[in-house]
Structures are given as structure tokens and as C-alpha cells.
Length: 200
Image 1 (cartoon, rainbow, N blue to C red):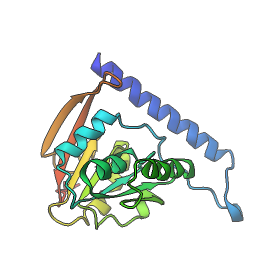
Image 2: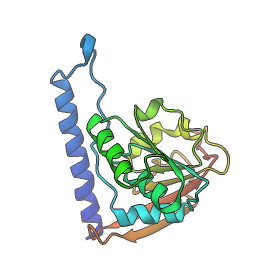
Image 3: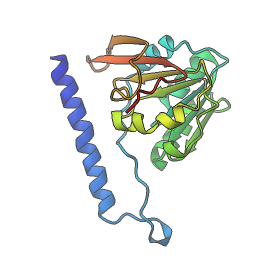
């Protein structure tokens, strides 16, 4: 049953990705007729109880700086700032989600500690981060490896459901949590910088 649920979820994500790609191909452009950069995947939010577990296992403290590439509505960095008193940086390409994330930070009284960047996740320097949270498709995680290799030794990386397609050494710790929100078992993977990238 679990495998079937995961298969359905992955198929849904890929189906929505194809829809986004089709829309981009239809001629969505910015000023100067340059193709508009669109997200590599659609936003699928991490359930709140899984967010809580991710932040718990990665050991967030008030001294951390948490980066969340592809932050969506900002729930991970907002939750981290609200619960642990740390600072957070969310990175999101969708203007609509950027607005939602910033409003979320204001609504939860953490706008002074949470910054939401409307940027391409592959163009942002994440080296200041002490914690990086990931809920991206495996290929996107792999594409982020060069940036994650710039993290300072001891920085922690926590990923929800998807790892690095075997391109780095296996996660140092793996956790399973069944969300009360969607009744699905979710995997959480933990690494500590520097990432040990496997030779081709």
C-alpha cells in the first residue's frame, strides 16, 4: 500500500511538471522576448508534522541559519524561526509563492528572522547556511550538489523523500514518519557536510 501511495504521488508530481513545461512551451515570455524561467517542478508542500520531524532530526537551534531551496509557501523556514528562534532563508522562483511565503512569515511574527528570495535555486550562494532542507525531485538535488559542496564542514542537510540518486554516499541517518495529514509514510535523510560525492 505504501509503495502504491508513493508511486501515485511521484506520478502526480511528474504529471504536473509536464503541464508546467507545456505551458512554458506555449510561449510564456518576459520583456525582450526572452523565455521566462519556470520552476523545474510544481510545489508539493511537506506536511506540517513531517516538517517538524525534519527540523527535529537535523537538530536546529537558535544559532542556525536554515536555507530552504524551493521553499514554496515558506513553511519550513517559518516553522524553524518560530519554534527554534533561528534565522531562515527561503528561495523560490514563483512570484505567487514568494508572496505567500512572505505573508506567512509576517503572519507568524518571524519576518525579522526570515528572508524569502525570489531567485533561481541554482544561482544562490548557500555557503552561509548551517542547515539546508530539501524537498525536491532527485535530479534537482543532484544539480544542487556543487552548491552543497560549498557548505562549511559540520553543516547539516536534511532531505524529505528524495536523495541524490546514488551520486553521494548514503545518508548517515534515515528516519521514517507516518504523517497524520496524508496517512503516508515519509522518508527523511540526513547528511553532514562535506558531502562525500562518489566518483563517476
